[in-house]
Length: 274
Image (cartoon, rainbow, N blue to C red; front, side, top):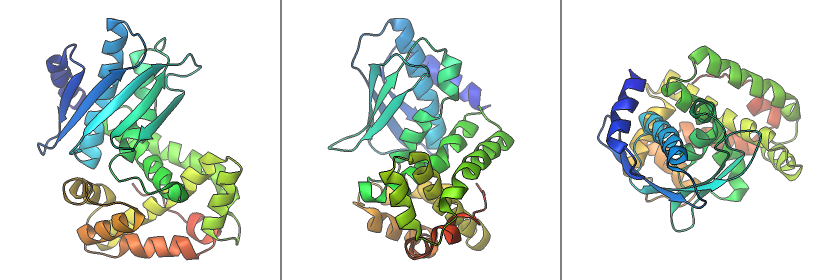
């Protein structure tokens, strides 16, 4: 059913590269494509199809964004479809993509990069010092968005999460504080360790919301888009707003634990509930 919805929207898109994607709650997300290198009409069609589909899955998962998302598309020969991408937060909300168009549409669709970067935009920039939080957040969502798109099953997503956590657990098996451990990993450019250690925060929050507050992280974030997303300026604001929406202290209490506890206390017992 989800693929059929995409097909209907894409017929309306045609070859127009400034489009609006609509979710079921009529919240609009506008995409503006900026082609920074020369691309053929066929290449543009493949890229816009890929990015419109993953955007639809993102707004189904996290709610519609009340701002235009600028997508800057660059060429970069590589051994993968999307070798590099990053969000843009300075005066706009956007993503810089570096792509190799020799890959098929299917290979672009199965790549997690666009889902990861788009999910970043559902919360404000919280600063480089809080990379563990922002990258953990996007890592938590990336495969769930592709699952929403119908590209991966729940079993496959769970296997991916398990594989990531099995690789980083050893880095957090220490009595050093979580923050010191995360910062040490960052200084050594062990970014997977930073990302997936940070993702533990969101698995724990989601578990609390589901077990104690009859909601989920996804439901809270959907409300966040239309209430506080354009108002909040930093991590403190985000946490306060998410607590308000959830009518709980799940976000602030879990953050306090991560800021004050050892790495092994907050990572090793994480339950992969999503």
